[in-house]
Length: 159
Image 1 (tube, rainbow, N blue to C red):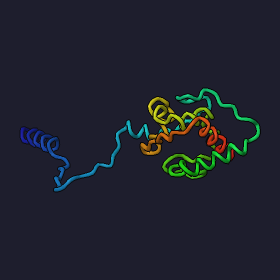
Image 2: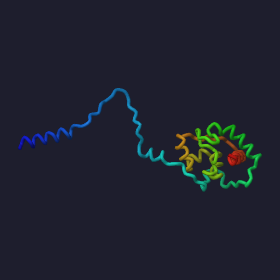
Image 3: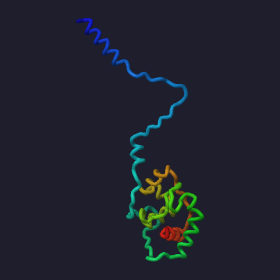
Image 4: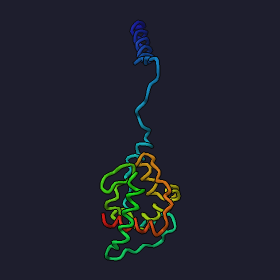
């Protein structure tokens, strides 16, 4: 009986100390697992919010029923000069596609993002979410006047 108890005790000891041995490899190892927090952040979609006016000088924008073609033409020229480096009309690039932007954002939000990208990225939750979605890409200050930003906003209505 003592032999059986000794054998079982020895077996339990070996089983508890044994197991898979980890091999050490020369060089370095890259871990491709993500933390749970990072996974949760990446899985969050950027919300559609037409009530958010953003952070900046624009408090109210009212679009006329008809598009002001002269304003839209000036806005298109400005867009093609500075915005196409990061934005395409109907395709994601460094930044979001602009087609249908007013189905996702308020006109005030759009103009504040154009005029005050630094403040928006610091304080606006949607701007922050977009920055995460676009791998930390930062919209740069373009130094446009309110009139130029309004022209671009009018052009975006035509898309």
